[in-house]
Length: 216
Image (cartoon, rainbow, N blue to C red):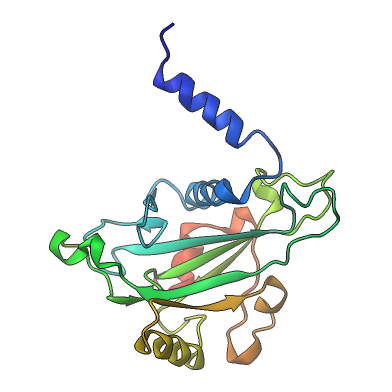
């Protein structure tokens, strides 16, 4: 029997994304594709393997603002393993500050990138807050809430105190360090952080991303 590549792809897609509640291992892929689709055709998915950022607008070899780099994070209250025990996951996001892996050899390849940092220009945080298994469908874009967090420029969502902590950790020998965000406190702007309000999929546009980065 002849087996085609397309048949295998279809079978794998049907298996991985058949359920309304997605496994943690590949829910991130769904969110990256969802955000890329919302941002439009100019947005490319580039986060394969160990690549530092997930989405990119503009040429790989360009500098900001001609190239905008986005990391996509996601969190969901329901997981395949907690559907029946009543224990729901807490919603949180880790913003990771790290050294650029030398194995990527970006300098040799002519790819501009800081030697350490968040290795992106903005985070887009995806939250699926639905906690009723009968209604939840993590494949439905309308059920997600999004937070756009610039990490460069005057609108940076990271405070100077946080930056000092992160830089200190790396200076002390750590390869990475993180600061957390929680949906319930993002809109409050606690600890000197700017207020970040959630938006729906219709508001998640390239124009709004550029406005957050003060590019429009």
